[in-house]
Image (cartoon, rainbow, N blue to C red; front, side, top):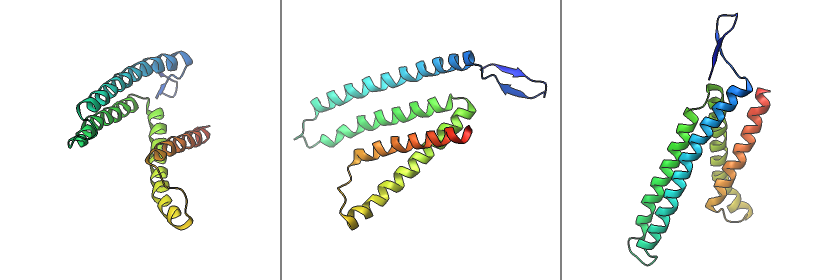
Length: 148
């Protein structure tokens, strides 16, 4: 980022399109490279773990450890990407993630009561992932409208 001194004698961020574009290109390339490395390692771990531990093996639960390592790596990559962002972008993304996490948690917890009282379909674990991204989109739009 390029810093400029204005007449008010305070430092502000230069938000010209070329500066933002250079920042996003550098940031995106770094993040995409890390995520691709994580995805390749994750796929190799799943394939080899499935080969080493067949379904009938009593040690089949050991497959969870490499998967847990991959999830921790992805979480660390996302946290590192957020910490590399500009302060205002970081604030917006953090608030949006917080809204998404809280809304997803309350929805998943509240669905148990709806399932028992009304007879709604059984809740599948992958729904939480889709709910999280739907709530992230809602939070991102709300953040964008608030900053306009």
